[in-house]
Image 1 (cartoon, rainbow, N blue to C red):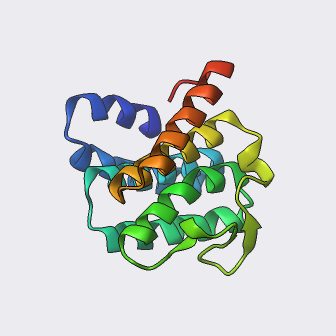
Image 2: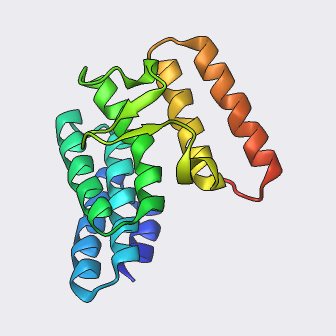
Length: 164
């Protein structure tokens, strides 16, 4: 209930004040064993914290903790959704240059190929990756990358009923 009520709260309150309720919902869901909702809350909290302008070092630390839990509980979908925001956060803090490599090593030392695995099969994950790459391209003035990402986003979106 906290997860859905906080979505409503985001419509009437500033994102910074409403966002904290996701942490409360995350703790409650973990305590009750509702891991799926717990990680949904943690993902929305981390994502909103990034876009609301929370201090990047705090966002990166929160994302790292969330990803550790997701790996432990093997929640690969939410992990794949969070990975693009993590990469962008790390790049903004100057901690990573993974955008220039095909083989990526994540913050836990695991290597994977971008576009392989679950992230290349689920439209919501694909759209999240495209949007993050688009934003990254705009932020770092990589216009070609931004253009390619938005074209890929629009092509995926037109093929599915998914609208983010």
